[in-house]
Length: 76
Image (tube, rainbow, N blue to C red; front, side, top):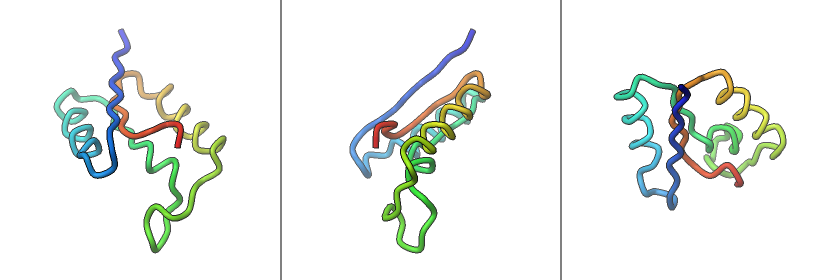
């Protein structure tokens, strides 16, 4: 049976930390939507990835993971 958990909250509320700890404790994959949504840049969170590309990356990871914990907004 597949189990999925999606945590979201305001920026700086700790969802990334809690999600990482929870996935480690449950032994399942952890996905951070911000890593798909934002491109790596010298100044973090300033360059957005194309929305469709972001959703494709995230969907591919989630579909292949089975059980997972996701944090962040998937709508930008």
